Image (cartoon, rainbow, N blue to C red; front, side, top):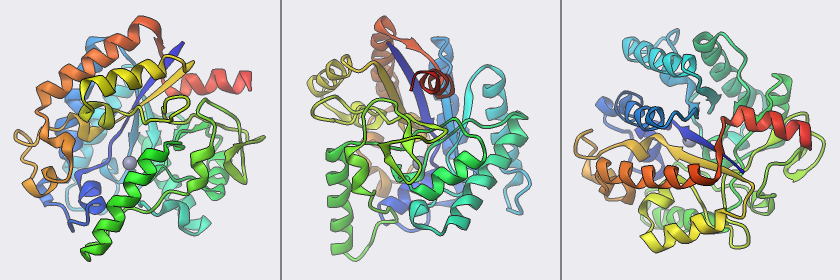
Length: 319
Ligand SMILES: [Zn+2]
């Protein structure tokens, strides 16, 4: 059995947008890459794990006409070092628009192309994989990925519980006239297979003949409970154990984390307005690292770790 760990490097501004909090404080613009990423990288390095980092292109674009070029340069250097040490860098769009799946095909392609350009500048190699902001895929995205010879998409998250929780949060924010910047995920994705599959280009949530494969984010069999970092971190121990026990029946565990899972509200100066809305930020970093270490060590007893690009290669061969 296998496991791939991936980390979506969404900047703090994304969480301000989700919770309808307006623009994030400027000094937090790069804190995920500057402060959380090194903690995550150290945890994986201790275990000799090679992981996949999903990068928001703009944060590491050294050619962009933006004020904080030095910070972007340092971010790009951090990611280059991880790539050179054997990690994979994946495309998480250029500016992380939550509505990406609903934009015009040309705009979707531009978001994917711009991140692709930035990653190519860092790695000097073709990028293999993509994850959409907000887990929402569309046929136009598949067209853009196939045209660039990507091997996989890993955006589908077939977790009804997550979908319902997101709908409830968005409705609550509308009620207080502070609408969320998030966009509701296409519910068709909830019926998608839970194991890697070859999708249809025109309906990526179904099986078909696409040249790339879909690597769905981990949900348990039967109940389809989300087995992602943020939910496992905040779950009570019995629930965490139950989700992990359920995952033991899956051949492949696509373990998704976020950069914010490695943030520390106190040490990183994250304001109370965000901490109040993100339960994971109420856990100190040492506690989170301890919980993640236990999860990773448990997984290592029964599974071999690989990057998503490596998983995609074997899936391509078998499907
Ligand atoms: Zn994201």
